[in-house]
Length: 73
Image (cartoon, rainbow, N blue to C red; front, top):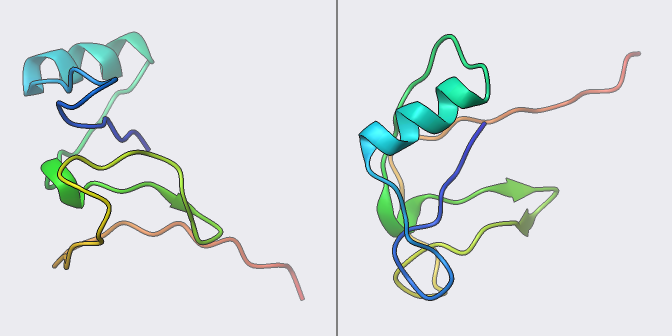
């Protein structure tokens, strides 16, 4: 999973061509682009790890990708 912060202090953002090159450089074989902008968030264990553009308030979203680890029973 890759999230790129948008254009703001400390981040230049990236266009789709630049993003494709980053993913190729990282060895990706398949990729999917979702919504960009301030709704792009990377959260692990309830903690926001990136700096979404456009402020600090959370935005409503209509799609998400979740990775959930469950302990074996």
